[in-house]
Amino acid sequence: MRIHPKNFIPQPLTAILVDLLAILALVWSWMNLQPSLGVETIIASMPLALGLAVSLFVAGLYPIHITFRIKVYVTTIPTYLAVILLPPPIAALTLGLTTLITEVRAMAKKGNYPSDVATAVGRWVLVTALAGIFAHLVPTNRMEQILLLLGTAVAMYLGDVVTCAFEVAPMSGEPPWRVMMTLLREGTIVEGVQYLLAILGAIAALQEIWSLILLALPTVIVYFAFKNAKEMQDSTSKLLENMADAVDLRDPYTGGHSRRVADLTSKVLHALDASGPEATLIVAAARVHDIGKIGIPDALLKKQEALSLEEWTVMESHTNHGAELLARYPDFSRGMDFVRSHHERWDGKGYPRHLKGLDIPFGARVIAVVDAFDAMTSDRPYRQALTVEQAAQNLLAGRGKQWDPKIVDALIRTLSKQLGRSDIAGPLPLAGFAPAAE
Figure 1 (cartoon, one colour):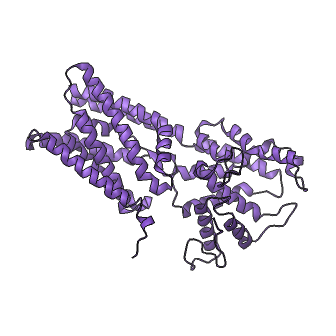
Figure 2 (cartoon, one colour; figure 1 turned 90 degrees about the horizontal axis):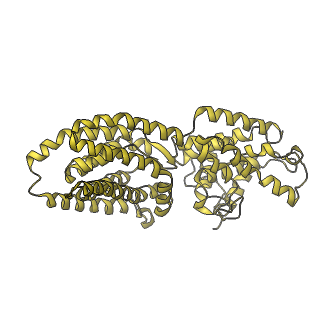
Figure 3 (cartoon, one colour; figure 1 turned 135 degrees about the vertical axis):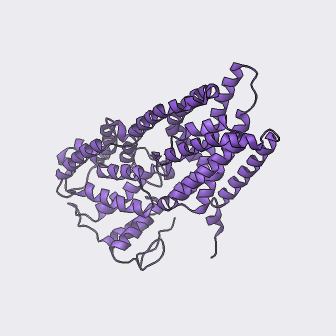
């Protein structure tokens, strides 16, 4: 099979570079501890390494979803403890093997490639090996020991953010620096609390190793506290759906619009291999994307003539009104931004903030494409509905201009299956259609 260079970068090239660095760091840390790292030391470390590995594996099964393709795990506490309490090579191997088992187990579900698994394993071996060397410097007094514990936490967190960005970027399609900013913005509090607990646990464990058991309860509390804060609850979803239905019922021409947009958004996300709570949040946002129209006068919503400039200004305000309404529901905080931005354009000519390209939240980009398609294929007072083929042609004409090209492609693939055209190969499978020049 022929591999284009663009498909080789950044994966699996990232995996190769990360794994090479990880091997070098592991060998260096091992050689740096010789001859103190003998067989007896290794055997004595095994029970603790096994216990921390089990904790890592269990914690890795329950992520907290932050954004598309980005999750936070409560694995920081056992990871930090492994770095502090185990010899650096043992800690690195423990993290590497546990990550390998976890990633291989979830490989089919996530749709990851071997290079993705290799990157995940390599980055944790690298971070753990380097942080371990720093953590095992010999302090001369109590204050130096505290500073080493804090410094190790900072080094680990920065290493985690940087390496995670290069792991996630190929999957999300966003540049690494943007992923880093998202991680720092959305994950610092969660990680900071975990590191604080881990440092306290490490101080106690250095005195009495059995005290690690006491960390189990606060770790579980932290997990559920942040999961409830970051992920939407069913009660909020039901309430907002009822409000969205009330908006649709005000206009006979848009009746059922929100439900159709949510349903098709779910199918497009499936075509994009997006699943889990983040996808659920995007679908929920699609369901209520026009909720701000609850504050638009009926005379304007039902007007059959073209809107004046002043009237368009009022109509466009529904995105901000919707976001302000949703701001009252803390567990919908990220979905609020999808609603605010679903009329932004890929070229920056949308509203209300004139965001451009990847600055537009992923969920908003998906909703924008699906919303436009449903609007085009629905009757309006001033025109009849377009056919699916005509609407698809319009989407392709705006591909890379008004809408994210990848999402347009995903919708076209979804439509082709609904039309029974799954026999046509390629990213744009409707016959007779070609992508617009970008």
